[in-house]
Image (cartoon, rainbow, N blue to C red; front, side, top):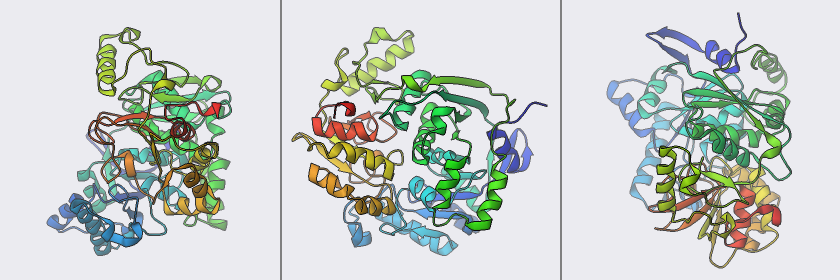
Length: 468
C-alpha cells in the first residue's frame, strides 16, 4: 500500500459518511461574513432549523464595510444594502449564539486575516467559508475551501459538507528565493508557469526549501492564491514555523494542550512514498518581482520585461485571451512594464494586508513621497494589524509619504464598498484578482506585491522596488 498525501490524511480523518461518489465531511470551523450568509440564515428560518454547532462558527463583517469612519458604527454606512447586510449578520449571529466581530470590533477585520491571527484554526482541520479565498487557511496544514450559499446553510444546520474527492498535486519550490522576493512574486511566477487552470480540480500541496523558509504570512499569501490556479485548496504541511506562530495567538491552545496537539500534528505530512496526480517543480532562485499586465493573475511578467504581443502565444485560445486583455487594459505590446502610469495604489486585501506586508511597503515608502498623479491607500487586514503597525510607527511613515491610512476591511479588492476605481483608472494592487471590472466599472488592475506597490506609488508608474 502506497503512502498517503497530507490531503488524503485530513480528508480521511473527517469522513462522516460516503454515498454515490460523494463524501460527507465534518467541518471543524465555519467562517461567515455579511455578503454570503443572510440567505443561508433565511433558509434555516424557513425550514425551522437551528445552527448545529454555533461554538464552531465565527462571523465577521469585512466585505462591505467602509474603511473610513468605522468608529461611528453603522452610521458610517451610506449604502442601504451594506447596512442591511451588516445588521442581518449581527442579528442572525445573536439569535444563533454565534460569536460575531462587528465592524469596529477591536478583534475584527478581514475574515482570512482575523481567524489565523486569533489562532482559531489548527492543522488537520476542515475549514469552510462563503468566500473563495478560504484557501488561505491551508497554510496551517488545514483543508480550507470556499462554499456557496446553499452549502453555508447545510453547514450551519449539520456541521458537515458534501464534497467529491479532489486529485492530488504537489508544487515543489527548490532553492532559495532571491533577496526582496516575496510570496506574492512566487505565486504570480507559478501562475505564469501553469496558468489559471493548471491546478483545476486538485488540492495543491506547496513544498520545498523555499516554501519551508516562508513565514506564516508568506505561506498564507501562497495558499490564498492557490484558488487562482484553479485549485480547490492549497496546503503547506505544519512545522516549527506553524507551531511558533500559533503559540502567540490569543485563542490558540496553550501549555499542555498545545503540546498534546503538536504530537498529533507530527503525522500531518505527505508520506515519502505518497503518490501525486501531478507534480510541478519550480526553481526558487529564478523568481523575480512579478506584475500582471492582463485580466487574469496568470497574465503576468517580471518587472523588467515588456507587454507581450499576440504572436507570443502559441495557441488560438491564448491569443484570443491576450487580445481581449490588451484591449480592456488599453495596453500596447512591447511597452516596458515600468512605462505604465498608475492612477491609484491599493495595499491591502486578504492576500497582502498582514503586518509583514505593511512592513515591506513601509520600507519602500520611507524612501520617497507619493507621486502627484497618484492616490495611494493602505488598508490593514485587521484591527490588530492596524494597532501593531501604529505601535511600530508604520502609519507615520505612510502618512508622511502621502499614503492614506485606513480602517481594516476588504476595501478595494472586491469593489463592493466605497473604495472603487473610476472608469478607465489604472490601479497597482496587492489583491488577488484582476478580471474585468473587479475593482470598479472599467477599472484596470495590475497585481503585484506590497513593496512594488509602494514603489509604484512613489514613481507614478509601475516600478521595480529593488531600484529604491
